[in-house]
Length: 49
Image (cartoon, rainbow, N blue to C red; front, side):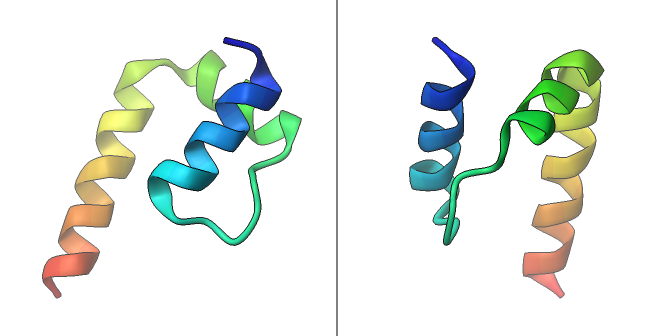
């Protein structure tokens, strides 16, 4: 999957107003799964509050 495809997937999956730009996609991919897990936990906490 290319970065533009991944950005479009993220937009649709997370209900974003616009797709994240290439730099955001690259940063997420470089950080790896640990960052995504931490962000998912933060989102869950925010929704609960």
